[in-house]
Length: 356
View 1: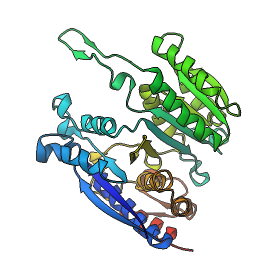
View 2: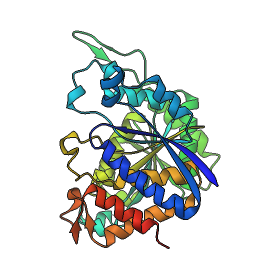
View 3: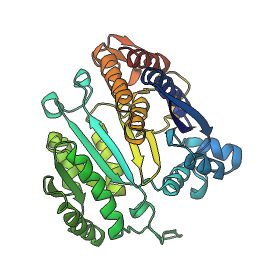
């Protein structure tokens, strides 16, 4: 029997609730497809700080490295907002990404027909949207040094090497080959030297992919085009800070940030998480939408383990629950047949994913 070891980091806020539902679904499809999953839980973020005084204990790093993949919920909350930056929950996540070398963040954006009215954009603009944001994750301004906060001055530095740009560009082109053979590279080459190097390097990589059409777009125009005509995009390739902003913008094409998953992959390790935050204001109320986390678990099966049939089961089950009108509170006003809790949504998806 195929066996996979998963490091589970539930995190803060709604993290434990949504991870529990993802595990429920994973267990259901593993039985149907004949593989075995084992889970090993670790702390990160505010929950880790409360126990260890550190948002990323070494035990968590080692546990993640010894696993076949990491399934992560969400971190952060007002409780820890006044901590020094090195102690804040978000710092733990940045350090884990760096420790695992997960340089490529994949964020698919799909608009479900059943939720076409959930978006604030007109249906004819978003119907059929299916794009992938490929964001460089462990370089750029979030990791650039030197950085400093002084009394009357603060600064951060945006740094990319040619090799860093090459490896993320290759990921984007490889993904495009399996989709619609189009890559839009987003930068600010008219202003930033870093973006000039980015553009030149992406052009070089593109020569190895003659069947993939490459276009370049400035980040401000890309932000506008995502709203004006999102169907023009297939794969969006961009750096860390631009990708962070654009992928959150793109998430709202679907109508709820609670619907979209992500995968962060590197040469060896993979980290799978929903793109949304910890939403501490609704934690413990049973109203969080677990779909993004469940879809992230599906990406883990597909990209990390190669369990394509199990991943298909989950994705088809998500489509089915939405088609049948089941909604969590965040999307309850859009063609809802029945409003369900976090737990009920997870159980429905698990049930449907296990059916033949």
